[in-house]
Amino acid sequence: MSAGTVAGAPVRIGVLGCADIAVRRMMPAFAAFPGLEIAAVASRDLAKAERVAERFDCHPVQGYAELLRRDNIQAVYVPLPAALHARWVEAALDAGLHVLAEKPLSMDSATTERLLCLAAARGLALMENVMFVHHPVHEAVRRLVADGRIGELRTFQAAFTIPRLPDDDIRYVPELGGGALADVGLYPLRAALHFLGPDVEVVGAHLANGAGRLVETSGAALLRTPGGVTAQITFGMEHAYRSGYELWGSEGRITVDRAFTPPADHIPVITVQRGADIEEIRLRPADQVAATVRAFMSAVRAGTSPSADTLRQAVLLSDVRRAGASGDGTTTTSVDKHVGSLSAVSEPSA
Image 1 (cartoon, one colour):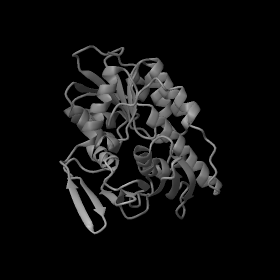
Image 2: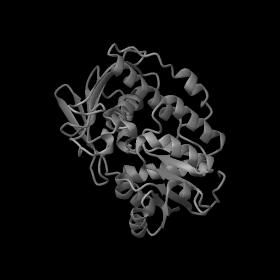
Image 3: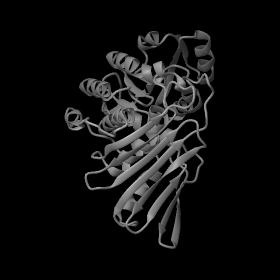
Image 4: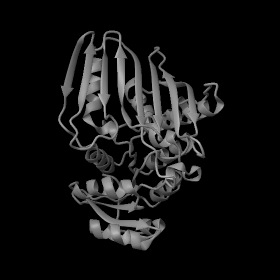
């Protein structure tokens, strides 16, 4: 049991900000989860905090620092713009609080490493809110590949694209950490890591700004493993919607649609094709938001942080950005020294 939590007592969580994802998805999941209570919600605008607090029967707080000073919370959720994550994650850890933070955890791999090490040293849970990895469909796909259903794996392809956002959306603001790579490109990149393992590396990348945009609005990357398996990922935020991946093997392929943000009532379908034979494997609906909260609560109770995949993902994001900026596909970041400092911190199962 980690510091600040008592066996059998509910974990009380504070929310730093009233972002849409907090109000629409995460706070309802917090409220519904046994053993977790929403204690407070903070905003720079007290009236906004009061409106959200009334809905979730918690205490409104003006200012994020003020929420961190409260003595009746053991954890916080950070749904702020990406560029603000590192500052407030570190402040929460310094206050002795467990942290669930929206992705990406920070804007660079060195900062992500430092935050993970800080959490590990203090026995606190620090988890990045990448929800799709907690959906059981992806573990089912991994079992199919491991069982040889498509022969030897040759390549992985994934795409996540969303329609154009309102012009005043913060994801178009570079100072707030906007851009397609961190917002939507993270999903197919994390999927490549999820299926191909930590040794996958970036071969090349392309990032493009849409007309009049100050951030990249689309991109693609090519990755590979030491064994020669390739991955091609595509992402964008001024596109027709697409959310899926394919694994191609020597004898067949596996396809999953609606892979990254399925609603809780969605029936997942895994399509396995071998030659002319096509099999559709239907799974039960699963709520990946609730599964993510469950994983976070397990980390809180254990006082440990998911680390290896979070850090490797941060390195890959940096490598894609570097390759996309240089245009020559050259990447130099080594993950070995990053993972070495966190070797004692295990990644809980999805």
